[in-house]
Image 1 (tube, helix red, strand yellow):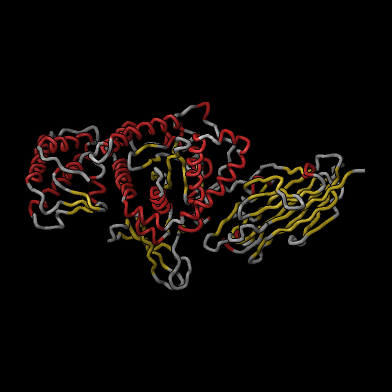
Image 2 (spheres, helix red, strand yellow):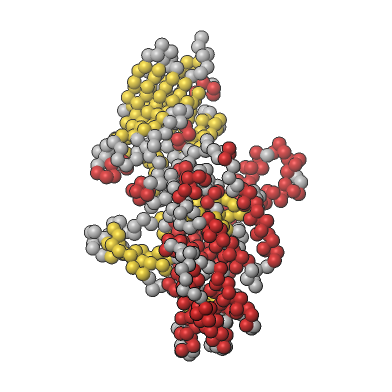
Length: 631
């Protein structure tokens, strides 16, 4: 809380700081401050005149964007109380009169000559958003709100899961047991455990705690509603209310959009803004240095400072993704412009962590000059760090941390394509139609060209795929895992029709489907016998699938022999298929084709490997290939 000083010099300094703003921002702030002073002086006993809500239009559009505006109010005696600031009844009005006189004098002394620093409405709105976000993140520091957030997190359960992962890591590093015995390594292990806890926490948040809402369902018949209109809200924690109409019942369903995280801890639903808001609060409640990340290309997420890695880590709670900052540019195909990070300490432009094409991004950044943005962010940060409650030790720590961050984001042209081999998928949160409309999902075909060498495991090869875990295992007869490969596309040779993994969190189901507007989709797995001492004897298949409304999931095997002869073997029943027709083949292609269905959702009517998310250990597909020695 800001404690006002009692001398005229400090008030003059606050008024003078308004000059740091560009003309439009400065003039609007002066007018707003004068109106506030006059309203109180005219009606000193009116409590409403003494109060300012932080989501009021005059605050958001005129005071928050202006450097020095709030300092003027705090200096005359205003105090902060949650979502408002107010002038206590026992505060002296003399300083308010002095502020009014100073503002009037400065305004009258300005000549009416043309100012070359006129700024656009777009820049003004942009700076207003920056100021509001920077103020709103202070809610995460509220100890009462932190306790409330922490109370709904199953911390013990997450810690146990983290300990299990830590033991697995320690087994991997058993060879280095002598080094691991040192106190330094023990300390590092504690830091790594803190990072691993985030993995468990993020998964819990997405799949158990928060729910994505594109459009709410009808409270009467549960049908998804259509947007009717958007109206302002009288609730000070809510920015607006979206009104949806049920086309069956013709009733209106309200979907309030809360900017304050407290009600969301109970409601547990929303879109990316609500997700990141609550998730960032919870990270803070768990003791992490966390910050709220807002992209001007309409997405919001979180970053935490990793002490073990000495860098900010990207976390997207909507996607259950950690440390994949290029996901938006490379996976979602976003045309990035400005990405701003907000914490209790500072506000930073972090766009360069999220792009490998700085030149293209720079061409799109036309809202303001780079210099004006840099100056504005620096002024906001200095204002926060120069407040009386901000300690010198914290400032020194943040400065060192910021230097590490700047080094991490340095643009090096010849390293622009680093991590180019890493795969990035399109967006998974929200309905598919919504994601396609926003251009945030990849519908391209996958050509991994992966070929499984079945002969390197001996006379029996068994491949198991689990769609819930999205993982392949090559196993022995006794179930021992010989090889593991994560993500379904990493084990395929080719796909067509934009095949993607669809997760239905509401129905708790997961499956592979083709993209909308495609008539067919197929996946091909390829197997070869590289060892000339072995030959192929038999092949069997067990796989799950579901079809609706006349759709089809069909399977076939293409067996290729050493003389280039090929035979096609239809699979009539994928639940239990066995054949000896593949004998002596040197290569097998196993192909699943998805087709048919009705209407706009035809793509969804053929579902490969459909399975409940709760059946974690259940196998979705088993391919068994028996080999024999050549004699």
